Length: 187
Image 1 (cartoon, rainbow, N blue to C red):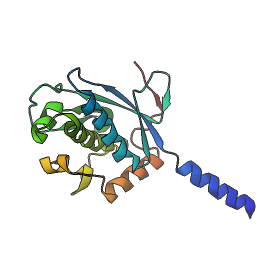
Image 2 (image 1 turned 180 degrees about the vertical axis):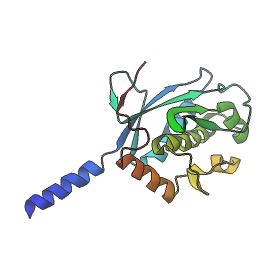
Image 3 (image 1 turned 90 degrees about the vertical axis):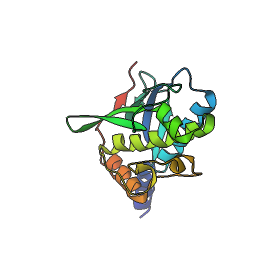
């Protein structure tokens, strides 16, 4: 009986271990420190709910369960074009671990810089990382997996993943889904 209890406790501890995602991000020169810090904090908080630990500044030679590459496409000084706030690359129907952030477009929607811009960028990044980790383009009617974010969504005090989105992400990560990669960051 004691052995069964110890095995159950050990299994629960292993299941609670977060999935480590190395974040390879090249920040634009014009992005301020307050924006960068708020971006990382907002993205980290959103992903933690799903049992995902983001490791900022992924380094070559370090092992991660997954690696996501984030690029700020238009720079944070530009006005931003088009309608998308961010996008995840897809090739031959497969979701790739490459995310592009439209910093200028997010700034245009929010109408702010600094911490508010970082919060909005973090929400967009969490949305795109969800696509990468689930290998899915699915959207929900609410939360961080909505197809379209409004200014209110980006400004609101709190915006998190819906229950359905969290369940999808957890199921995909438990099954080893979302790209089946055990990766090291490469320079």
